[in-house]
Image (tube, rainbow, N blue to C red):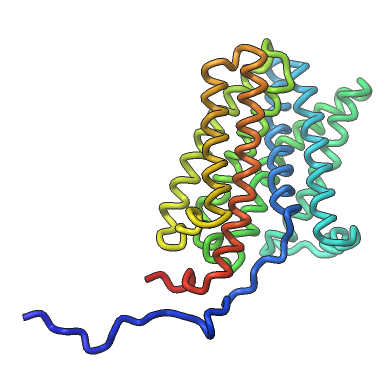
Length: 292
C-alpha cells in the first residue's frame, strides 16, 4: 500500500509575492551597448583576416565598422552611467576578480587600437602602425565580445547566473554573426565571401547555443517563452534563421548579401535585448529562485 504524504508539498512564495532580488536598473542603452561592442569585436577580427588574405575593401569596411560600433558602444555605456567620469573612475583600480574592472581596462586598450587602425586606413598614413593596431584590436576582440556575458553571469539574477557556461558562447557567436552580416552588406560581393561565411556560421552557432541555453536552464529557462523576453527571443530566432538562409541561397548577389546580412545582424541585436529582458523578468518573479 502506498504511503500517504503527511506533509503537503511546500509552496514557495515570498512575502506578499514581492520580488526577492532587485531588478536591474539598466535601460535600453545597455543591451545596445552589448550588441555594439560585439559588432566592433567581430569586425576587428574580420578586418585582420581580410588584410591577411588580400581583401583591402573588406578590410577597410570592417575597420570602419569596428570604429563606428565601439564609438556607439561607448556612448551607450556613458549615457547609461549618467556622467562620463564614472567610466574613468573604473580605471582607477585593476581588479582581476571583477569582470567590470577587467572589461573597462580592455576597452581602454581596444578603443585606441581600433581608432589607430581606422585612421591609418582612411588617411593612408603610417600603414605599419595601422597593421599593428589592427592586429592588436583583433587579439583583444574575443575578450571584448564576451566580457559583458561574464558580467551578466556574475550577478545573482537566476536566468543569467545559471547560464554562465552558455552566455559567453552566445555573445561570441552573435558578435561573429553581426560582424559578418554587416560586412556582407557593405563590402562588394567579390570580396565579401569570408564575411558571408562568418555570418552564416555565427548565426547557426548562435541559434544552437540559444536553444541549448534555454533548455539547460530548466524551469528558470521558461522566462524565454513568456512576456517580452519570449517575444524578443522568438523574433531573434526568426531574423537570424531567415538571414542565414538568404545568405546561403542568394548571398552571391548584391541584393541577397545586403538583405541577408542585415537580417542576421538584426537577429543578433534583438537577442541581446531578449537576454536583458529575461533578466528583468527573472528577477521580478520570486518563484525562479526555487524551481519546483
